[in-house]
Image 1 (cartoon, one colour):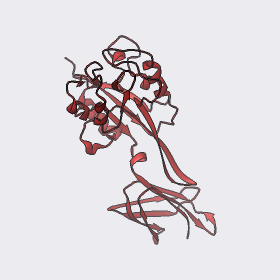
Image 2 (image 1 turned 45 degrees about the vertical axis):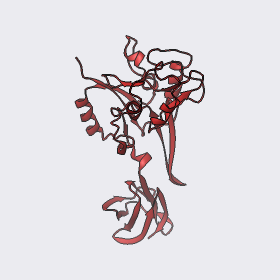
Image 3 (image 1 turned 90 degrees about the horizontal axis):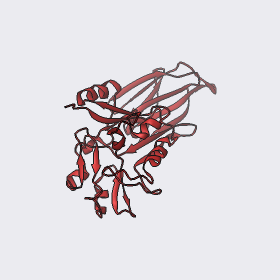
Image 4 (image 1 turned 90 degrees about the vertical axis):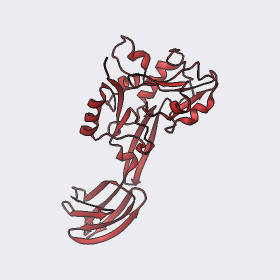
Length: 271
């Protein structure tokens, strides 16, 4: 028997908020009853897949990204622990809600720490992403979730591999879990998640009110030291930073110290 599992990989660098994934999900599930996997999705107020915008920095130097969040299909699913008779995990890693056994249990929605479950008032049942298990179990081609199939940039990828193969992919692509502190062992991984969870410090180096290209900028603080040269616009940007205090040096001279709780544009710096 194969021990392959289903996974999703979502790259924040490639998502530009086209919402094709959400529309494909609705096209597949609104008005369609896929029992025993799930029942019809309501036309409104269903969050089977959500996209959240994050804007970092201040104008004119900002960074906008989008986090796509379906059910994480956790190995240690909180919903499954709370109601093991209503939520189950298949051998291929997909977590499903039994719509008949879960009927009338609105509390089930409260047991997803990722807030990826919604309540269908008309059908009186909790619902979520099924990873299009009804498609994966059929001969329908291409054999992948509709969201992944509809993504024009391949920001959202479906993988059917062994856990060992997935561990290798996670290391090679520097993939991360969303909220790893939960210990839920999700089957959805993220690439470039730092754009949503970390901070940056940026700025522009000027001399005589003109951009300085090639200036050496050093950032020192919170146990890390980074250095880079300014680009043709005199700009620098240090990313993947934790909140804290950092010292900025330019061409070996201390310039300023900044304390950040979020991404910061340090503004024009005259040297």
